[in-house]
Length: 213
Image (cartoon, rainbow, N blue to C red; front, side):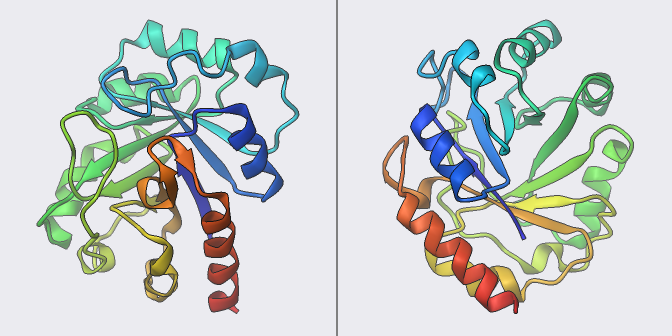
């Protein structure tokens, strides 16, 4: 089970996650978000760090030139789109770097999810599914309807977000789908906004491992 921790705003947290063998770290470049990086980590600092964790740049309706410049400055490994980016734009970016496309699926059933993602089939490398989009794209607070994905024919590795909390490890391990790739964690693993609770992250990771045995 892969874990992505989103909303990282310090090198200390990046290094802590790397030391815990967390697979992905999300860095938000959307200025509307309360998790916006806003120069709290410099590109030179991040590129110089000896890290195994994959660095995911999170964008919302950004221009191609801005995205590619940010990739170079920060040495990003993947891009995650959380806005209304069309499939054609995702495909263009995916020719340069791996792309995760986020879909918000509140109230949708399997057939509607299949229809929603169909045009993105050859436009990106991963999907992420979430429930409810705040105006400032700052994080999700509502619970996820796991049954909504159970019958969907996704056929691409995907992350599930949607307000997963430290108490949800059992729910995560019970979920079955051949393309389920990982979880995307954020606001419920914090001491305060923008400060991750690493003890909760580590406990959740260990619990996932124990429940999967």
